[in-house]
View (tube, rainbow, N blue to C red):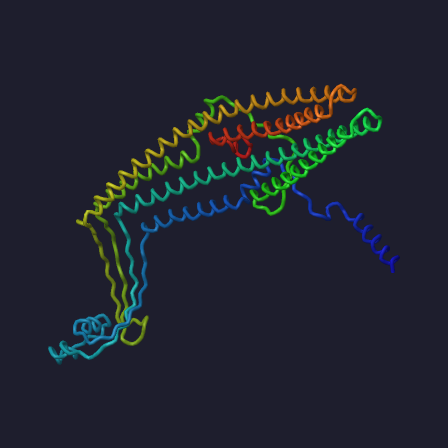
Length: 451
């Protein structure tokens, strides 16, 4: 029985070894550009904004529909002994004869009940409708503004993908730093054990080295967890449910002069959107003023009547009409609409000026932050070199019984912190450069997504 069980295990292990490498799903390894392009098509929030933009495009068609003729079909049934309607129904049915005049006027005053099936086709076409023309222009401008909003949302998603992508690279480096710390801690433990076994060291030094190794391993566990979470976060931003890995090479972002970003910011998507809405606020005033103008149009109808059944044609007729509709008084509604539109123009103007000033400030702040982050990275590099040299010197002194274990652990802690600090400052610097591109509206061009 045991032999059969052992044979089964051997067979299953053999099959497992012989399986091809692609038999199990592997993480996707994407470049930054591939990750952003995937997010442009798969990000749920971005897809929702795209659907909303399509919905707003239909508003243009809705506005234009008021310029097209309205065609109406109607089937109506009436049974009446009303003198006027009964007389009119017989005329429309073309059944009125001299016999109907024989009993007049009593026949006219007390007619018998009569049925009338009326089938009609009618149309109405606006010829002069100022509000409609303005409404079409407003719908187009609002769609354009929504398009700019969508463009800004794409920039926002791109910069968030960049930060998450960079976060994965940083998390990987933190894992590497923690593994170096484990290696150094193991080396310290080895030296402490060798010195203790040779009668040159203390047992407490071995215990301290063991505690330092356990602490380094604990940090490695946390670093690996953070790396897996960052991979899953990138997949989520791309509209996926699995983790996504990234390439090792850091993104390369150039920093230009401050004036370059200030000029580019004048074309920022959200600024363009607000400028368009400011023009639409002016259109709202034109719409209110158009309320004082008349509406003119044409109309017509073709009608069939029968007393037997619907859609029958005992009698038929047609008519053409022209109309001029002018609302002379509406209870001061138009006056309040004009005042409201004027206030909305002023409101939009204040928002527009405020956004321009805010963008100028954000670019200035982002540019100085890039300079600050660059200097911090440079200083962190110097500190790391000093920490590496300090650790080398103290390690040599400890091996020669010139320093205590506590001194070695202190410089090792300082070295671990310096390594982690460099990794953090590298990520922070690239993040500030990306933020500068986002604030100026050049982020998609900087990342190579748009030309």
